Image (cartoon, rainbow, N blue to C red):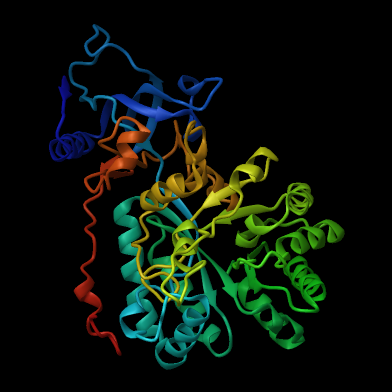
Length: 457
């Protein structure tokens, strides 16, 4: 039996009923070659293609080229649901967030939209209020939001200056277990790289991270002994078998060249792990020859760069004199991609002093990234930046792509093209997990009203 459904709510209901029978086919679903592993996806260029997707017992049984709506080969007892060319993408992978900072904006009135103001306001709030109970409620709220929108994996940075590490890391391991099977969680420690001068601190945090299965990270900036500090970070990561994840060059200062120094450190140390560097804003302010030399080293070192357009558009070139920003803070993803450097987009901060807005919706991040970074004309395979590439960064097999044999996890949009998908919020998208539409609602902001210091403004 075949059903053709035009309304999203009705389509959700059809899929839900079919999933209850244990087997069904999504007919005329529009998949993308960049995020689909199937013979039907073979194409010289990154493009959409129409397919029929067979789902059985919560897994994708097969992906085949779309057939006519009715054929004599159809099983009369098998539900065939014609989705009319709607786009299906794999669940999003968000590889750079700050779950511990999320949703503190209502109690940080001193935040002024500047980077220095954000640092001060966050430091004050962390010192005063970041208990396990406070963190747990805010992080769980954020994760329920991300799950509702269709994210299946998140890496978060955890502020790890003493004594916060004693609170945040044990809580994170509990939350990771609680969310297992819904969102795969990873954590990277975060501290000012100056603290790597302290042997005891660096040893203790690296061991803590290793015991928790995490990633070693720091905010790296041009201090006089930056090369020495990076050497220490790389040695600690090698000793404990850790990957590295840095914040670097989050400024408009063309003299900020830590990305280049990270690449040079990786090359001279022959580091075997994976390296991610986020932000890299100052690169866009440097001379072409310097950019070329830096990116050649980044490519040779196999570094992945993550751009955070939501946060950097918010923070960079914010002015106190009432004038408009002249520069928008995004880094050089096109130039990187042409050199074979892996690049990703991620959410970064959510409703905190570093970014007053956001809800961990990676479609919103991809939409903003497409517009701010001109990831279109052609759209190419840029969708990999929020799916397959971050999944590879995070060593997550089975995430970031749609493939036969994997769980039937996908997001079914109303849109049938990039223009349609990226022009609306797609708030009625259908998130399918293990073959069944998710009914997970968005949490209400009122849930956070009772947190200490909360003040609605």
